[in-house]
Image 1: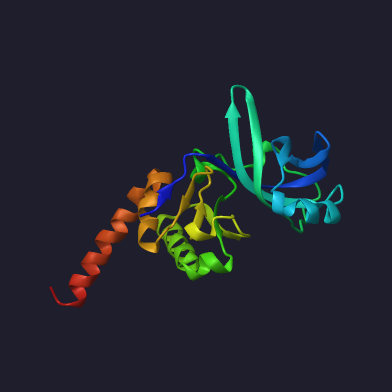
Image 2: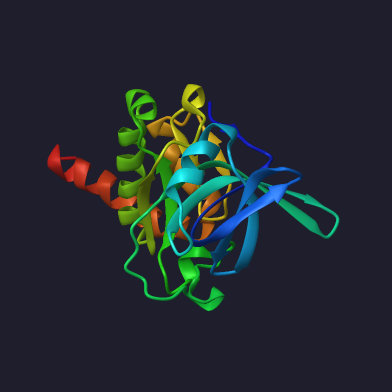
Length: 207
């Protein structure tokens, strides 16, 4: 059975602006995103390599968790890596899909899944194929995108929905229920197809 993480995960692409210190140590990256600049705490195991590799202007893909305390939000990354981007400028927030209503957005809602080896061994590709089939059957304006390691290898396959809800230990047979939960408006669109399949089967066997 899949597990629902109650924390608030995030995953976005942004432009690296520079490092920031906490006391005497550089612990943060400042990243410009479509919804503003954020100070994000780097994973400990990546800090040395990021110090050597990153220069201002690099495009980054960042995923991790955000923690809200009153009016303040703290961002902590689980993985950061450079990514090529052909976008000349950052899109505005108006270009982003609306998480609560992904099917109503002009831009496809993006469902993320970890495509690293550990998750693939646990069935990540089968889960992705099941999601793609559900998207087609429901006529959704959505895409499935593989990502780098989400740092939860033992709990794979890992999945992040457009509203940032994260699921772990997903099985392909559980995908339909997850899609029902996040795209409730699409449930009616698949019911007539299910009825048609029953009729077709009856015709095929001469009932």
